[in-house]
Length: 512
Image (cartoon, rainbow, N blue to C red; front, side):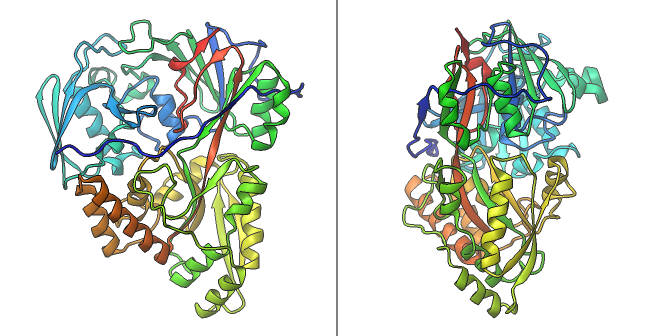
């Protein structure tokens, strides 16, 4: 039996041509000025970006979107058709613990070598064994790989897993031949099958990609050179776009949208974001080892007012374990109401009659309007009996092994991107041993996660996911918050429909 691979939920879309007056140019702008994008060169300022050329030393949706220009996965998500579709794979078959993938023939890497099942095997092995890989746990259930022939590979999981495709859509295939040729220097020469070839990279500078004129797929990339730069400051990105120094930006601040309606050189498009934002609570640290304290935190956050007042209503408060657009969403689920009095009562029962002091970690500039959001959290939680100290860290520190991915953060603000199924973030953050990001363990929840992973009937699986949501609400190892509109700004002579998974696919852009 094949699992249901449809991606359910209606997506809303708001499109408009928005404008802006002149702006002062900030010092982070690249040299040169153009009032319209060129087919020769498009510059993108992104709030995220990549920090190294190791293709697996990250686990972030925006970074996947960048790497996808160079290297490609077996499967991808067709957001219009709401289902998984082939990329490097021609077809696949689900057989309990086994997934049989047939690769497309005739695909070549940038160096001219042919794509084979051995490249898939090599890439997945590197993901699982490379000490620098931050994607190892995404393939932890992969226990065996069998190369049947050059275009057939069998992936074996420890248990039947109907959501395995969700993991594979972000696992990119690199060239085994290139790795053998360059050895320890392989990451200085990223080679894949994608629509763009690597040209140069400077950390905290530009990533430059050149069009692959022999690209096997479609649509064929139109723009010759793509330049990506990580710019975390919202004002800098907006100023650069208005001044014509950059062609595409992401994470346009909601409060700028109406002002930008005045500039005919700029197009703004917004799509419903698939990223779920939440406050992660690690029960391995005091006072979070007490369930009453975790529940109190939920009562102390007024997510509705933040979406309304800080994000200008361009977002959706999460009810239950996931957004309305996610597979497995429970339409009857309700979040904790905002009730500071109830929060203080729970803290008193937990042994903190005078309130409790906590540290809330985040990485300033990583997410839209995060500084304002964190200030709002602190103010709201103070009314609920929490004295909150806000601590911002550089992303590489916050997200690295000394931070979130080392299990060192007791309480932090995070967003999990590219979510299309409730299972995705629930399993990653709350299943025992799934990742070190939250030290939470509940054997009953683990059994339910294993059950839904093995259930191919969509309706039966949804009921299991609903029960998982109820357990998470009671145990409260998190405070679910919202999904935001992803807002992009770009030169008006670019034709482009952004995706809802934060992946900017430039080969889908057309320059008029």
